Length: 385
Image (cartoon, rainbow, N blue to C red; front, side):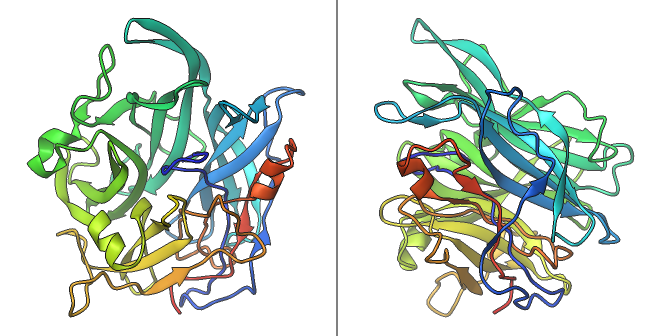
């Protein structure tokens, strides 16, 4: 999700390379371009970022699809800084295992709007971020599903969790036609009236009562179960990664478990975890990809953590009870800035691309350029060592 100087922060799209055996394939991070990406909606509407990638391949591994966020529109630096108020969800396709991508279309378009907050009318933009694309082959006519974080943004208040939720829609093909978006997941008291969601997740388990908002969905369909992992945010920011599941293709939902907490992040030397993806390798081992946050509350690359049992929502731990990190991907020094990098995604068929992970080139921000400050890249990393 896009975040400037805040804990739930920005992302740029970086692509990693692996073989099907998850070995390193490419050397070093390399920018990747989405061919034909139209950017903004007009000649003066500058595209500042493409980021938040979610990749999913067809079962035969021949075609890859990537949903991602496009940031465009005016930008401002200084007091009340922002980079492009409009955040859309776009779709790209790869026929060469992630070596190159081609723009296909725009699934969700952000629009101007207003909300009444504490009796005052606020003007702003309804944004879409952190899309997660998943393939459900057992749901005929609804095989492709998209989960997205929708929220209201205002220049003075930035993102407003009290006016935000996770949307859902599906289609028989990634190219559509997509159903109308459904306001699916809310927290306890959020979103505030007049907005509502189909599922108030906090009602599913008492341990969720302090969560004020959910974001960064990561999805996986395995053994007739649809899983969605998300960041649960409290008043202090990203607090834990939680897992939900549906056994009927998304009609009803249940809480599975809390996967990772701030306390477990501290055991590994980090402030918190944020941004989840659920992935597996060719051997069927399922992993949680999660972005650790540094003491300055920025993303610091990616951790690859194996599941012991996803049906129970349990990650692998060592003899001391600490989470087992199978691999850590640190941002390459040439690209790393104080703005951080991560979270990412992966598909076992993305052998020429590998793990995808966003990064912000802060040098462009600091130079006040209108060039893209988010970059799509290969990291040259897979799930294995």
